[in-house]
Image (cartoon, rainbow, N blue to C red; front, side, top):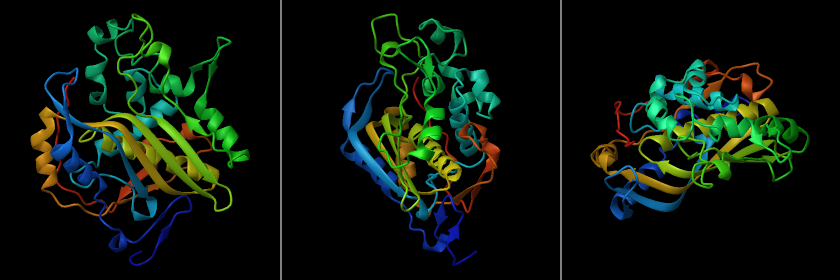
Length: 308
């Protein structure tokens, strides 16, 4: 309702007219273009990058969906679908598309040729990929550990602990001895620290990203981990109050420079609302259909290339 705070229990939004356009993303785009270090990435050409950048997104100011270009429809819902797939341990293209993720997100990375380089079957992201490591982390006794289950089971009874952290990184199969890599793309994101305050019943998600393609991948990852926070808060009966997004290596590829200059010429608009309607009792039960993107106003769609 216009003029009134929208309190959904798991998140609270200011009215649209009170939400301030957030310039953190556009400011980082400009900082990298103007003062970033020029590097030569393995994909060829050049890129500009900075090391160490951070965004703070108070959820009351809206759900952080980029407004410089239109990310509604398949982009928004496909991005949520990817993370719901990872929550359920998906590690193949077929599994991810079964959750509603567009095939185009991963198909060029899991060709027969690329998978063969790592001893994987065509279409397989790898045994050290996101879904596999989140839900089947290898243990010393030869078993596996499900980080997503452990988070949900433990945080309800001990939310005061500072140790609630999900990691996507399994070094032996990422940068171990030659021939041991078992992943087509080393995980760029998915390192999540959950901070719960049992006194205020508030939840903060700090998501750390090893590598971020700022014009393309990073904006989608921000959606994913804001969605992660919303899902967890709803299950816990907490209010999700802030997403903190930290980048280690954040960059813009040469093939993206002209697109970024176009983005920088566009207006920054207030963030939208996202609602979550579901009777899920576990995070694994959420699906993209449970999320609704509302009050979203953006610039025109833009297809920005990425090197392979």
